Image (spheres, rainbow, N blue to C red):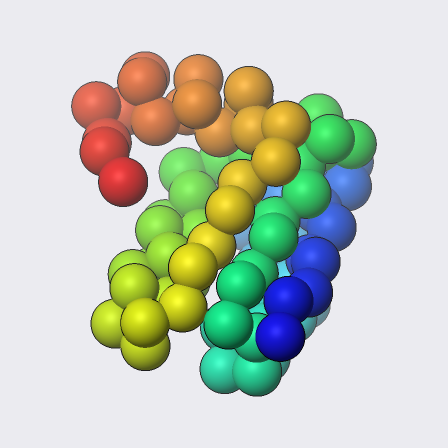
Amino acid sequence: MQGTVRLENEFTIGQIAERNDDLIEAVKNWDEVIVDMSELKRLDVAALQVLIAAKKECDKLGHSMIFLNSNIMTDMLLSTGTKL
């Protein structure tokens, strides 16, 4: 089963608590998790860590996670030297 989590406006340390539950449920319940970032304007390192942890959990469960329109995430990964 596939599902989409939409991240809009900001995903920063202030939104982690509310968005983390969505990501955890998505990872547990869907074989393919699509993270739509097309409306995301701001991402910080704390939120990036949450996304990386969710991706790793997907991999561990044999699920997949796809990041759509994730230029902001690509920029953050490059600036921090992080690889998925």
